[in-house]
Image (tube, rainbow, N blue to C red; front, side):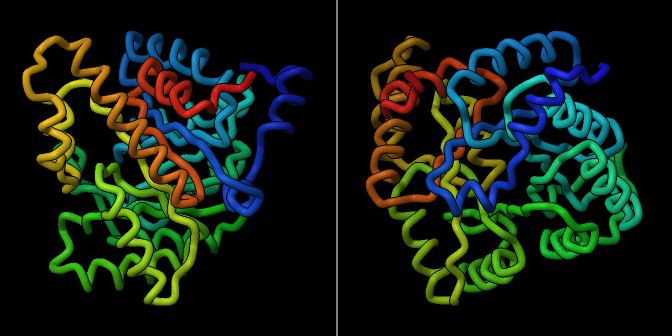
Length: 299
């Protein structure tokens, strides 16, 4: 797609480093994943058009690992810069790629104008996408991105500890070391306010006060959220599950799930969190409803 004068002007307006946005005030952000086919592409385009008027501080684009996902993530992030007013952040994982390949990806992102990166260790890759993995942990990827230069860099945080951590003390020590190198963190989704607040207190005790943005996943399907929680290591607390007892209609489940997410967001905002990051699953309705409930929709 050729860059027109109008899109160049839009590009110049939307580029911003997330570290600077956080320093200026609270952020609100959305997360998307790259489409795998034409149907997902059409759905994502509709979602972006619906959510762009909410004027998010930034949006993030996930990365599955492997060359195909690499190209989709880079293309989607670069496309957002050219054709929308959104400030995108690209995810990147260590898995599957050699150090040289990771450096090439980082250079490609900078050439495309991308200034924001979420550096991740990544889950073990599928057997058919096995490759050389010279970097194992996110802090190594942060170091590489710093060497390339020009990025505001975030890392992931797990309020309930990472599922592969041997114990809580080790998890928090590793998270603190990772955050010390990065500019900010974004959490995996969670459902208890205390899980987030306890994590922040534990990091503070280790001398780390980098902003950590809480991640919000509205429950729209009990089956899907349970599967995702199992994979991510997050717990769906019994008191949250109890809210859905006696409700089988999908519309009721969706309504209650949005209420649960709204209540958590309200508590987090009251506690003065640096922002809110919404996992959209490439859909817009639940996020828009929560935004409206919180009074965040621009006039």
